[in-house]
Image 1 (cartoon, helix red, strand yellow):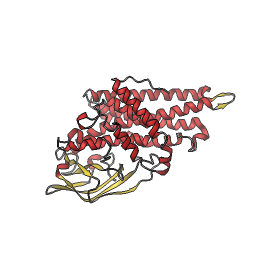
Image 2: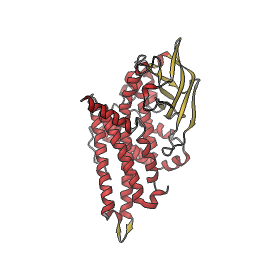
Image 3: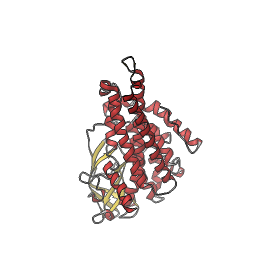
Image 4: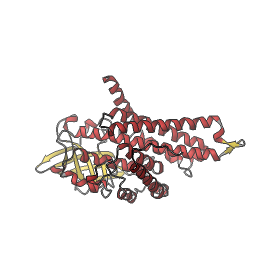
Length: 380
């Protein structure tokens, strides 16, 4: 199904055309083999970086493209419709660069060109084994020691843990609660940073997720992003943007599942006609087409608030909640449309369904999104 998009500039349309071309040439032909091998497509990310697609929302002076978030999210959607793990990698990398880009000093930002150009890949290190949704309770500690910090603790469920070149690490430099948290930018090669074995996940198998142990890793003091004690604010600000990235990924995945199911239903014949002509099935697909359009509109509306410099955190939570729930419904029903064929790996819909589940969990579970939205309602 062709998506009719209203874009702010001709340059934005060219970017989406480029993203489509790269997705068709570099992503779609490779996804099945890489997912089967559980192999991370590092060179694909470098290709996207060299094409300028890893720095879309960042300023040109740092090698970015200075594009509105609404354009960046539509690029993510296109990538996700071909290979979710790659789109998620772009979203996570963009999230990992955000604290430095938004809160770093001019001297620190000299690192940005290599980061957003794709030569260096990032990981966002917030979640811990005992602290997922309750991020303010994190226990990874950074003790000041002379001209640096000594990091001790463990992070969990870290995307790119085993392949990243730098880690944006949220750690405790003060007392309990959110005011004791700070943000450090650590190099992967730092002694004492030890990525653990990759988790065995049900989906996104080409995206390595693992724990990271920090065993007395020494990080220079000049790698502190923002002031001590501002890390929690930085983390939550980054997540507002990251949730929009996940929402866009969900829209792209859902669109891919719908398109595949519709194409199958047009060709599959039973009782003398195409199965899409049976109302029971046709109405399911109609509902899904409507829900995907609504998810896309909600996501882009939140992005436009962000681009206008207006508060958007609650709208980002709504977009992430709605879009990922839609992706779960659409991918599950796509399997049903294909029947027995949908349950085997000859068709991608079984992979789409496995992948959709994680989108309801990452960047804050959908239950946490409901907490964010309900608290905003309570405040009035």
